[in-house]
Length: 306
Image (cartoon, rainbow, N blue to C red; front, side, top):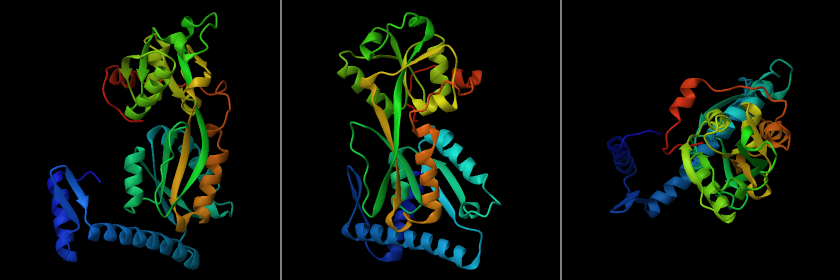
């Protein structure tokens, strides 16, 4: 929500005063929910779902123009596959289909934050990711829908692979790396260690265009999602399929009561069929280098999210 610590404490105290129970236990290690707090959270989620369902029922019954579906997803998914499919759905306006009467409100949020927003009833659907060797996120009373695999490809400067000798991760063990967000970096480091080496990080950025520009200019190698290359591709790079890199599984999480709503099903169907979530080649994608300011912004090591 973006509240400051004093403001958050004030809201917590006001809520406890209003309900006349202790909801939060303040400990040296942080704040945890009491039994009353856990019950309040469950009931709040139920109320939020009921309100969301009521909006849809009223819209359908009285022709109020459909329901606004609140979405949150990680940035590279929002600006790529999600934006593309929402654009396709929006283009059906006026055709008489059900999707013409729905609107979608999108927020960027990393998986932990999106899960929290979903649990608190702030959104109707969360888009999450996990590497295929990790467990998929779960939340009680919510349905998890697998949208497909988004493969990780090894990006190397073209001039480094003119003879096509790079085919595995350990072939670039001596080269510097360009890493993504904390979770992406953790995955890349784990994969490199399995391949028998410790990657040497030179740059960290959450911008797919900046990652590609850094690689293209010979400043390192990187693992990047195939869908990111589809929606923003920079020249001067060899994109190499390496089996040991695997894929990121993309999932949507939605409350059980909304899973079969037409506006939810329409969007999920579009995303499962979307080209960004398939094995489609990026060869025909438009070349779209990032602005110089974007590249300069990310040419230093630091924590970022993607």
